Length: 254
Figure 1 (cartoon, rainbow, N blue to C red):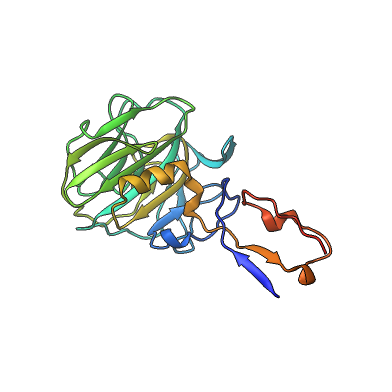
Figure 2 (cartoon, rainbow, N blue to C red):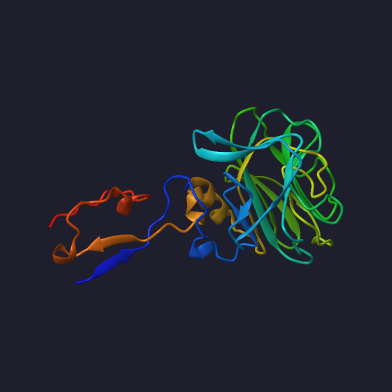
């Protein structure tokens, strides 16, 4: 009997840039955003602008910290024109943003805006929809939140930590533009704090999928397969790396 390979999932933040899991292979942008701006959806990198971008270690793992000056921008323009989409990021504000600061944005006018409102809440707009309406989830300094926006064709829906907190009627984006990370696409309205694990998909996630992703965020990345050897084919010693990212520790004997 030969080697048996069982697919598994990450149970902690992967400390490298794995490919998307099969369920999320349709990602337009997907980045752990830990050490650099690698977009694993197409193996390219976001372009860094200015200083003030640092890799930082937190309780959950690594993140990118933006100090209100630097930002990343996608390597090419994205095209959400006329499309349904889902966009998200894990964020940890270093201050309460009481104005229109962005952590993911292609521009407010005609585009996508995921950031803050004028009262320290999170806000999501599509195609110039009214400001300070589609808001929720009070920002807390040092608290990590999962902020996600869905445009389903007629509504912009804002989720914070897996729960729908607001929605407003909206029309589809009308502009194709670069995606800014930690600021608007042109470097304005900079975010202060951490950003990690960002994604963009040209489909509308269901409420159940959003909640599942909040509860098990690392499922979005493909983990290496777990290998099982038959007794006659087993190695002479056990390597813990074989069972990494698994809930079960596998013992091997000759």
